[in-house]
Amino acid sequence: MLAEKVLEGDLKAASQLMRALEEGEGWAFRELSKLIPHTGGAHVVGITGPPGAGKSTLVDRLIEVLRGRGKEVGVVLVDPTSPFTGGAILGDRARMQRHSSDRGVFIRSLATRGETGGLSLSAWGVLEVMDALGKEYILFETIGVGQDEIEAHHAADTEVVLLTPAQGDDLQMLKAGLFETGHIFVLNKADLEGAERMEGLLRAALAMRTEGDWTPPVVLTQAHRGVGVEELLERIEQHRAFLERKGLRGEGRRRRLRRGFEKILEHLLR
Ligand SMILES: Nc1nc2c(ncn2[C@@H]2O[C@H](COP(=O)(O)OP(=O)(O)OP(=O)(O)O)[C@@H](O)[C@H]2O)c(=O)[nH]1
Ligand SMILES: [Mg+2]
Image (cartoon, rainbow, N blue to C red; front, side, top):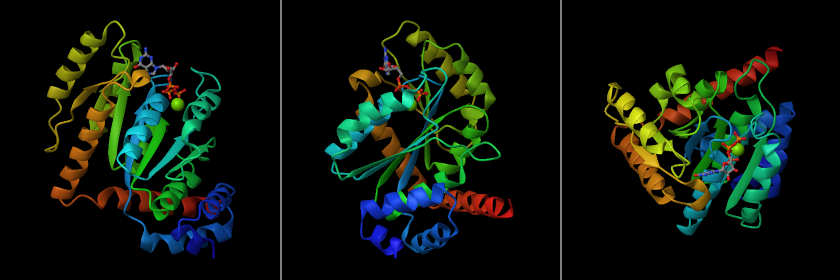
C-alpha cells in the first residue's frame, strides 16, 4: 500500500516508509521490494570529505542550482554530527531549511550507523525510496573516514571528494583510499591561504593515478559563496555521460542493491 503511494510521489508515505526502514520493521522491507522494479532512474552523487570541509554548504548550493534547472533532488545526510563541527546537524538543517517548503526537494538525515560500521541498513533503503519518488539526483553526504568511505563508494554513481587547503589531514585521507575511488575532486575553501599549493599537490597526485579511462577533474569552489558550483555540476554531468557511453550506467545501482541486500540479510540473521 505504502509502496504504491510512494510511486505516486506521496511524500508522507515516503517519510513513513523511511522511518519504518530505520526501525527495521519487517513489513517495510516487503514494501521496499515492491519499489525495486521501478527504481534506477536516479543519479546518486556521493559528497565525501573530512569533517567541516564544507560538504553541507556545497550540497545546499547544488540543490539551488539543480532546482534552478527544474531537477527534482533528494538529499541524504549520513551521520551529520561530526566531532569537528559539534552538532552540525542543527546547522545543516538550518541552512537547508530554506528548501523545506519546496516539494521538489526531499531531505533526510540519518543519525545512525550500521552495527558493523559503515552505512546503516536504512541508508540503502532510503536511497531506493528517493529514487522511487522520482528524484533525478540524490546527493549523499558522508564523512570520508574509515568504513564509510568504502561504503559511500559502493553507494554513489559519481563520487565527489572534498578537500580543503586548511586541513593537513587531507592528503593523508587521499592515501587512505579516497584517492583511488573519487571521480571528481573538489578543492573547497579556495578562498583560504594555501589553496594553490594544495591544488598543485592534488594535481600531481592525480597525474599518477592511471586506472580507467576517466581522468578525475579538480574543481575549485567557495561553497559559502556559491563559487564553482555550476562548474562542479558540469563535471558531474560529464561523468554521468561517461558512464552512459561506457555502458556502466547501471553499475552503481547494482552495487547499491547488492549491498542493501547483504545488509538486510545481516540484519535478519542478527
Ligand atoms: N572560508 C570558507 N568557508 C567555507 C567554505 N565552504 C564552507 N565554509 C564554512 O565551513 C564551515 C563548515 O561547513 P559545513 O558545510 O557544515 O561542513 P561539513 O563538511 O558539512 O561539516 P560536517 O558535516 O560537520 O562534517 C561552515 O562554517 C561554512 O560556512 C568556503 O568555500 N570557504
Ligand atoms: Mg555536513
